[in-house]
Amino acid sequence: MNIDRKAVTNFLSVFAFAGLLFVLTGGQAVGEEEYDEETYGPQAPIIFTAPVKAVIFTHKTHTMDAGLECDSCHDEVFQMESGVAEQNDDFTMQSLYDGKYCGACHDGQTAFASNTRCTVCHIGVKGFDRMQGGGAKADSHGGH
Image (tube, rainbow, N blue to C red):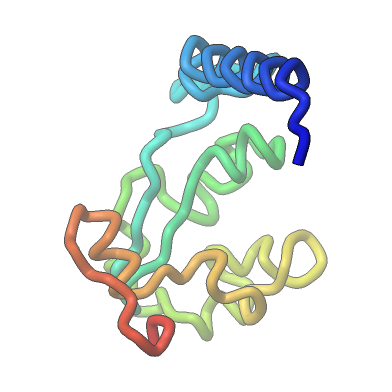
C-alpha cells in the first residue's frame, strides 16, 4: 500500500489548525454569538426533580437558539424564581398535556408535543446522577 505522505501531512496540518482554532475560541463555533446570561438567561441547565427525577431545561435552546424572549415564559407560564413550579400541586405531566407550564408551547404545533420525544427533556435518575458528578453508569442492558 502506497501512502501519499504529502496528503497525510496536509490532512494532519488542517486537523491541527482546526483543533487550535477550537481551543482558541473556547469551543465556540466561528461566527457564533457569545452567550450572554443577561440577554438569554442562566447558562447552567435547570434540572427539575419533581414530579419525576429528572427533567432538564436549558435557556439557550429556548432563547438564543429558538429566538424567544424571556417574557415569552416569565412570569405568566413560569415564575422567574427557580423551583417555584415544582412546589405547585398541578406541576404534573397531565398539566403539560393540558397546556400548562411547558405544554403552553410544547403542544405539537408551536413545538413538539409534551407527550412525544420524551428523552429530549427526561434524563432520568442516571442522567441526573451523571450531571451531579456521580458515577452512575448504564448497566449491561443499555440503561434499562
